[in-house]
Amino acid sequence: MTHTLPPGPPSPVPPSPTEAAPAPVPTPTPVPTPTPVPTPTPVPTPAPVPTPTPVPTPGRRPRVHRAWWVAVVAFVALVGAAGFRATPSVFIDPLKDEFGWSSGTVSGAVSVNVLLYGLTAPFASALMERYGIRRVVACALLLIAAGSGLTVFMTAPWQLFLCWGVLVGLGSGSMALAFAATVTNRWFVARRGLVTGVLTAGGAAGQLVFLPLVAVLVEGPGWRTASLAVCGAALAVVPLVVWLLRDHPEDVGLRPYGAGDDHVRPVEPSSGAARRTLGALSSAARTKVFWLLAGTFAICGASTNGLVGVHFVPAAHDHGMPVPAAASLLAVIGVFDLVGTVASGWFTDRFDARRLLAVYYALRGVSLLFLPLLFAGDVRPSMLFFVVFYGLDWVATVPPTIALCREHFGADGAIVFGWVLASHQAGASVVAFLAGVTRDATGSYDVVWIASGALCASAALMALVIRRRPEVTAAA
Image (cartoon, rainbow, N blue to C red):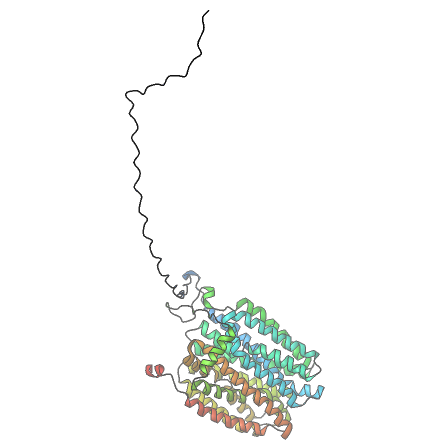
């Protein structure tokens, strides 16, 4: 019997003589760690360079520069602001008759209106710089509409102070002449004096449009109907402002009218409106020229808005002239103010603004000294001569005053003019109140007319004291 042995482990296969043993892998040489490079000191980010104004496509260039349309809308808004602010002058006698209030009480509400009109102007100018012209003007018109509309429900003097004094004062002040300066500075490089004169004349046009209409309404349906008419007119201007008014020419791809190829858009202010407004006042108040401009413009306000604008109609009525006739004369003053102010803007582009102011104040003072002798129960040629002469000078002082603010205070010129305008309205407010008190005490306005004429003579001398900037003198 054959026995089979179990298979054992396989025998190892000897390596082929042709296969060589693998060579050992050399250990890599360690790479030295690089020396760390020091972190460079961060370079401060340079201030942003203003972007040049984009040039509009030649094929789409408008025939009439957009700046003129903006000026038209601004003119309409200024017409409304002046008319809304001037209408209380024909309310004095009706409110006295219905409520038994004294001339001093009604004049006090008007003086609050005039004062806030001036104090609001510099802050409104800074708000326009911060939030845009369109928003500020639209809100101002809504304030005027609210103030004039709510007067129909008033039964106490404090309500008159609130509605016509505070609300209408704040609204009309937000569209004051500082608004005209802002529009002119942003949209125009050439023709600034002329445009300033035209926009300033909007105040006269406001009297022309509103005063005769309001006087007729007061004599007919009553003062409440007149107040509602003012409310409706303010609301009617709001859509026009929202539709056509723009804050900067760059917003529509244009340069300001008359600007060259090197024009750049000014950097928007980063500080708050109140801070910038007060900062501009703090800087300007350290100069002599600011106080001279503020003093002359305070006298300007006292002799126009505060005295003639508020008390001419009741003064003429004291001498037997019907209220509509007296209001029409005040409107005619506005007609000739249109001519005088536009001409003053043209003169300001060509002549020394200081000497223009001196001439304007001197002529105004002479006319006011003769006014007490001209009142009568009807309209006579001598009164018509006064209306024409005084009307040509009514706010002819504004274009040269704005030019001097721009010359001496540069980029803050519009805000500084707002503060100068505040002094204008402060003077107007004081005289509006004192003239009413004087009428209650003496029965006439004669003392006030004469005192105002003397103040105008002093303003003429103050204007001549203002010095021109050295660089302007050297260039001349």
